[in-house]
Length: 283
Image 1 (cartoon, rainbow, N blue to C red):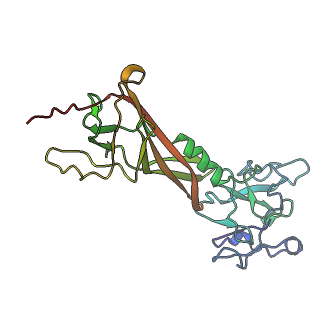
Image 2: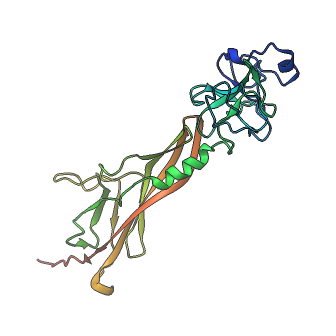
Image 3: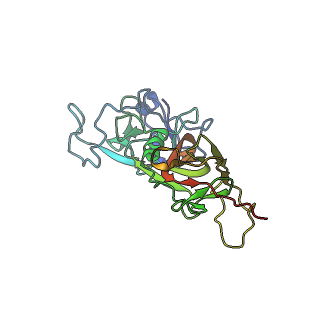
């Protein structure tokens, strides 16, 4: 796995013959696949030395058999700001965000063939995995709903019932997951409300509906339902009305574009009593 920094790293310009024999490292201030850089990490992405031992002073041994005048230096303290790429354009990540180089006798030396070494020897973080974690942590309460006539009192057959979800509740919800310098944010946006009315019927509303106010025309709503039968014969004399709001879910990452995730739903149920309005014929 070849890697290079998207900034000028003068420490990677090694003039010694021993460095020339090893895989080279040159500066690249353009970055991305097709650039001129050839500093790389090995195919597994792991250093052979313990790369967490940073800032070793001359005279301290870095590993068994290592020269006593070697030390580790940080060449990228945050790879979300200083990009490191594979030669195919894939963004590479260190779990901690830091990348290191090993200096011996004032010269940069390769570690297992690598001049740019990730601080962690664990696999790079996958922002899509963080997106799933963020999705699971999105906090969305049960929808707040209303009807007209008021379902807490009684609804009626052959009368249009207005249905709506509280506008303050009908909004975008988000959550962010962070790990190893990578940040992934998930956004859940309500798309539609499915009203199951308890009598076997349902209505699907592409939006929250319209809140009824005195003086509004009966057809001013875009979300309504008309019961045909009374709930008198049901257990408890009521139907169970259930509202399920579906959310479209998308994610974005600090290290590149995101995508979409499985929808989220939130539901609430309430018993409703539906009566008949008795008509009296008069002459």
